[in-house]
Image (cartoon, rainbow over all chains, first blue to last red; front, side):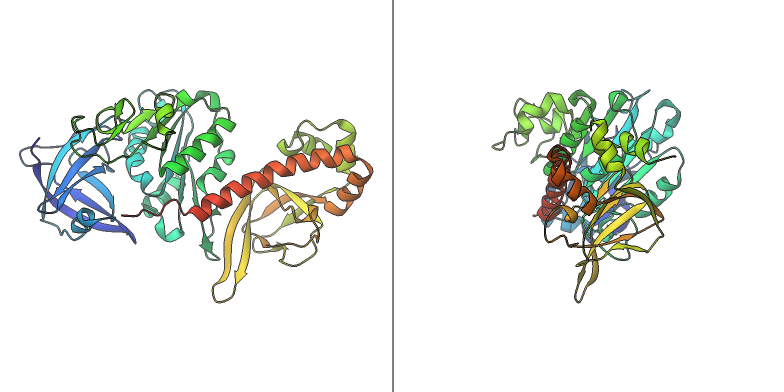
Length: 271
Length: 153
């Protein structure tokens, strides 16, 4: 697949090491349809290509938003881009969060660190059809108050009466007025019906493992839990095998999986 | 006379306790309230209570010279605050202060220690419950130490 050319509309710094790129949909396309949870392969010309989750609003396909953590040469090059610069794009790829399957259920979203970015489109989609769901709860954990992603949006969401938002940080100084502790510690506080909930989890694998253990303590079944996994994705179309996890290719069959289907492979250290 | 018995009986921490043990515990319980900013206990003070938080949020902090008070954990509604009353030398390791108006049931640890010495079954049931809390806190602390959100290139 050949990358399509996209122009950067706007860039903004989110935290010390994350930034968001707003892109114009690829040349020749009026808009960019995608499902919450899907990702694109973004190509910094002359540097390299990386998989980046789409973090924007799926109900607004005229804008294409990616939130990126700076971890290597490609993402560093992307951080340097200014409005008007161009990027290569392939996508969208992969499976989606079960936003429609969750109609009629309580929805619990658990995000850790940059994991909030791929979950944000799911929350936009849920809020766009809010009346179709039971309780909607967002639990978000990150390292420090300075590392909180989408801070203003979290404040807006927190003010809503139809959405329950819990934010916690691993460590904080005296000025922080919120919760301190890993995200798993706030799961027991959340009010939802564990037998009628769909849970979406995204974050570091260790955080997801502990989150799932905590959810099980609350009697949530594994087939109610969806996770977004990350591996070394290259081709994004299930050919190269770089992102193989057991019988699945993360790029094609994932990144979003129902946990009971991926569990046997998720827990094998060697893969 | 109205007592705290029904509230304690309903609380997940005491769930499953036998009636006569609950009767012993009620005798050591009292209602307390802390205003936002108020200290519940301070590092180094004698630890002879624990608290079932009914409403509000409490920060556990440690004062670090040069950095000031560092928050290490918060304890909220439905959770249990404090276990230093269980282990000699019965001194608080952290400061605890209410971050907002906090209502709780205070349980007199000295009173419970004495009753547990007389009734080892009571002591066993209390320790079993606290072991779970200690384990959960230890797991959480280990996750915090791991710094799991740090991404290495």
